[in-house]
Image (cartoon, rainbow, N blue to C red; front, top):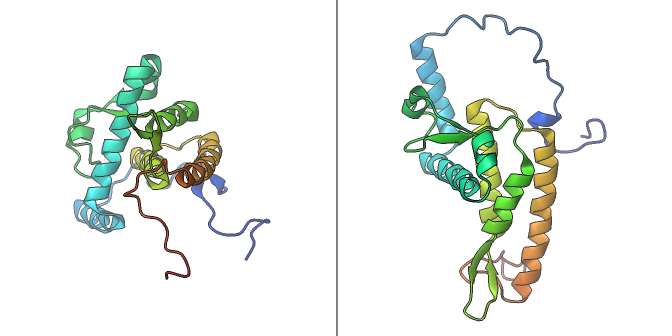
Length: 194
């Protein structure tokens, strides 16, 4: 059923929200037992392996910024506190920093992805591209990291990243015809084969 001309899932950044009114009971705490029960339920959302992979991807992004855009690295990341590093639910492990998600400049993420899409170069100079799913996982990692940090990404991030990924899907499909993708990547099963 259409909601205001839109069909499908309504994303968080598309919802009407009220963040001005004070949350009732915000200064009170629930019991440790209930907090543990909530964590146990939330842990079922994804496997720990995926959470660890997301943290590694986030670290890969900000380490690239350190090398290529040190000014943005200094302004767009922050040092983790000892409490954050020790919080097992955050999955920081050995990471010392995290991205600042509120106000994240999507241009720097797209710059990273533009470099990351080039998986390898053959001896003849032909560039082999990464899979679309690999590129999407970096976007997923950023969205997950923002959620864990309880920071909202700018709406511009969603608009620009959606366009970038759609464009990359087209680019990947074109170079796939030219044999410039990883041969080990799985192609979708055709309806005939299925």
